[in-house]
Length: 369
Image (tube, rainbow, N blue to C red; front, side, top):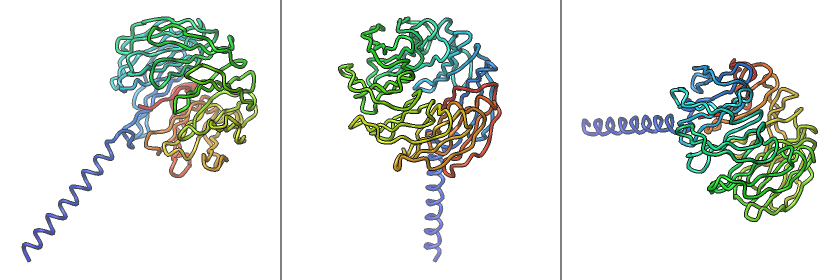
């Protein structure tokens, strides 16, 4: 009996240890609850707010340059690049210490954003005022090159192999193709009127450009840079996002308050989904089941099912919601409310708002580490 009792005790201890090890591993895996940090660019107060997901509280406020609009996190999660529109600077912060590594002057402008190249050695920053892309060495903050593109560039996208970047220019009505090995413009592709957003399909074969002034999306073959088709969509198309597997693209039409769904195989419009007023930004859940669209004009989120291509829920948030980001574990969405100076937190398991976190004035850009 003693031998049996001892065996049972050892077995129970083993089970307890296994459960403890499993829970510890889950708690510390990338994207687990409490392990990510939210960074918010507060355009009106010239600061970056740092939010800990575990406590859902602001743990630091970092002064930066004038008018910060966009935050990008390096692939190794060691640096944050903050583009400051009013001061035309890029502030580089070391993470998680939040110390300033460098300030790159005359590197960006209104709407400017940062994207990191393959391997994370270099960052590429759009400068809408000077019509160029600033190339920055990530670890040192040293300016490596200035690449002239068209007038009023804002968005930028890099091919999966890191060889080329595509930069739409709103006033030039072109997309500049950058050779990132040489840091030069390899070619320019004429597209629709006021091209704004750019997205590359998940298989790397096609490039989509939203033409805000021409009410269409231009489809370009990446390998040949040939224009394959111009697809009519809604009014004032801006943001683009690909659905799970890249089979469908979702186009946010600010002027007509709807989302156009394009089937990539046929390059045809499959559906047009009414959403809230002035859809601004979107993010997709890690499962690929839902796309969450921020609506600036109606102060809410539209939840689109990728299975039914319909809005399944509308979630109220703060005033004038702008950017949205979803945690990698799929538990929460964070929405920057530029009008109410706070961040709405949405529980994606229940599809309900759970809190509003006060930050600086006019929060706009938002990212996760």
